Amino acid sequence: MHRSIYDIDNLVKNLKIRQLKKTGGKGAVTELIDLLADPSLNIVDAAREALFGLVPMASLMERWSDDSPVQITNNTKIPDWLKGLCDGWGKDGDFVDLCIQKVKNLDKKRADFYLDQMVTFQGAERLFIKRLKQYNMSEFEKSFKKKVNSLRNRQFPKQLSISPTMACQLTCSYCVSAGVEVNQRNELALNKALKILDWAEKCGVKRIGFTGGEPTIYSHFSELLELISKRGFKVYLATNGLCSRKAVEAIIRSRPLCITMHLTPQVLVSTEMLQTYIKNAYLLVKEGAYVAMRCNFDSPDENILPYFNVAAEANIREIRAAIPMPNAGRHNQYVETENLRKFGDLLSSFVIEGEKKSMATVLAKPFFPCKLPAATAKKFFSNGSMCVNCSVHLLNFSNNMIVYPDGSFVPCLGVSLNSRKDISQFKNLKDAAGMFKTQIIKLMKKPLLEECYDCPLWKGGRCVGACLSYRL
Image (cartoon, rainbow, N blue to C red; front, side, top):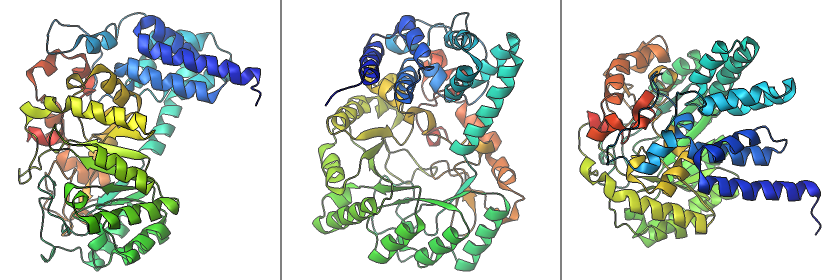
């Protein structure tokens, strides 16, 4: 097969990008910034991913505003590779300045395309707008603001998760739901579910999630899923994979955005349950559903290979790793703060195994990048999982709200600041989430480790380290 000159050119550029990712430094960043204007979208995507890994200050979203330049300290608990990636941020000639100079040198059409790439750097967008204004580039400033709003509305539409039951067939010790027994009466009444859907529709909610407990054992699961789909809501859900055939068929009909299938140690050691999990996952993938496996590693010595083997058998191409965090009442088994750093090598092996098997490996929960090997941290920076694995502050602190069977709600399953009030009593999502806002801000600004104050990623809250539930 003959390659065109265009193909060969792209091949050379891709090889160059791989080399730049390894070498790093300002020179590599400058070359990659130039490639964001390349006519090939594949090259642009590769360059952007490389920049996410090399400039975490630009790729990690701000949780609060901080315009002071990064000051690199001599704190030995912060690895040199991390300091090097952040050095110079906020000063003349930094990443944002280099991008603005690139925009100046492009024609109008290419500049507009370039701004499309810039909006994906969530940690740089506020500073980018400020600098555009400073340099009297008002036309670009106005266009960029519109692009930011458009992308954010697509990335983070209004959503609400519902836990129709907190019961589950399994009793995983690390579960944030704390193992409620199946026979306990803790189901969401169907009439209350319909009332919540009415409220969500009135509030402009676009996506409804299912979590728990195990949502598929809810008595009215198939019926409620059908009602949600008919109303035009997009659906996503988390499940342990032990669904009935009826539940699987209902999920397929709802055409969900994503299904997160938790593979637990309890299921791994049971031949019957494991075969049910694999059969269901395989069928969902076959029917076109996007399925991701979720693994909770509660020991740094965990054998990760069985998870990858099951994923391969079920045709799952994405595996999400989480280190168990405490629920607010500390009723579950979780990794103590001082032991989190022991999991760096495990997560490194997780990433390496994923690369061997051509599977996407992402973080499902926050983790300290400073406790990871450099290559592993850069991988998580690059694929975006380090950025959005704690989304509780988005959309005015309503992004991850979950409604319990009694109608009360929490900002997320881990941070159980329970409302004690029925969510439908509130005017809208913002009004409901507002009761948690002050507490969540306090949690976000309370670092877990003393060295966090010296870490450049603490600026603007780009790194929250471990889950906010530790701070309660």
